[in-house]
Amino acid sequence: MIRLLHTADWQIGKPFGGFDEERRAELRAARFASVSRMAALAAARGVAAVLVAGDAFDDNTVHDRDVNRVLDAMAAFSGPWIFLPGNHDAATTGSVWGRMRGLAQRRGLANVVVADEPEPIVTCEGRLAVLPAPLLRRHEGADLTQWFDHAETPSSAVRVGLAHGALENRLPEGADAGNPIAEARATTARLDYLALGDWHGFLGDIAPKTVYAGTPEPDRYPANEPGFVAIVEIDGPGEAPRIERVAVAHYIWAARSLRLDGEAGDVETLLAAFVEPGRTLLRLTLAGSLPLRERVRLEEILAHWRDRFFHLDIRDDDLFDEPDEDDLDRIDVSGFVRTAIETLRTKAADPTDPGREAARLAIRMAYVEHRRLTAGER
Image (cartoon, rainbow, N blue to C red; front, side, top):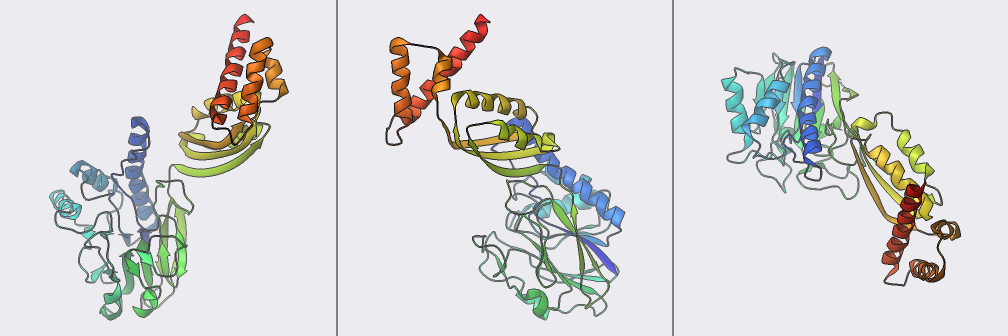
């Protein structure tokens, strides 16, 4: 029996430009920490090799410091690490892979294998034959795994394909179809396992003996299932693989939608349900309508939870202020001011009025200001 750890899409060096400097640094650091966890897992589970199915690096311009940090993070596992160039880190002239080879050699690390040639890699004392399909440029129109079908490998070796791209006819509609891979490749090439990268969520058994491991550390609000690696056990050539999905992520990226009609309390309930907000990035989309007093309450709720979540991204373009009589009574004005507010309320309620949003904002500001002044009087 041979046991492997299959991973992909580390995206080391990803800039995370949509975040502030502090969060960018923490998200970047998490990617190195995920490599450390994978190395420790590989050692603990006694795997024969780690297969990295492309995009270990976010691009070919990553600094040597980042490459060295990756090599440091790999230290807990001394067996072979087999790296496939993907579309982000294609094996072009001057790519990161030449520098990684050089740094590994200088440090005396003989277990770093860069699979940048389409030829079999026989390792683990002849028990494992890896057939790689390295990308030599970002986009390929041809199926680079086709050569697997005719490749010769030792009869005693487990035969594993390693590729990065889109498995034809198997990914969800709308997925990137670049760098195509035939859906029956594991069968036509007589593979015992086909380790894939490029799709960032875990997809087990997407085709016979074929798995996408996904990214081990999420990097976006997912519709798929990132944050895992595959531990693969194969009893011998021709035997079916046993595939275990193992969670390794630190940060949790989540997306939720909530409709509010009159009360803001459901937001508190939703946010409080997250067990570890300090390592959660949440994109919360709100829709519906709230009276002004509940809109103020909502802002207070969000202010509290923003300090508890690692990141809280609120999308409320479809959440509208709908001031009611109680709101206007609480402003406690009369005369021409009350008449002006009533006029604003009429404008705010008219979807055809071009000044609708400005009217809503003016009413909310009047409400908040009056609330502030009356609080000061108390």
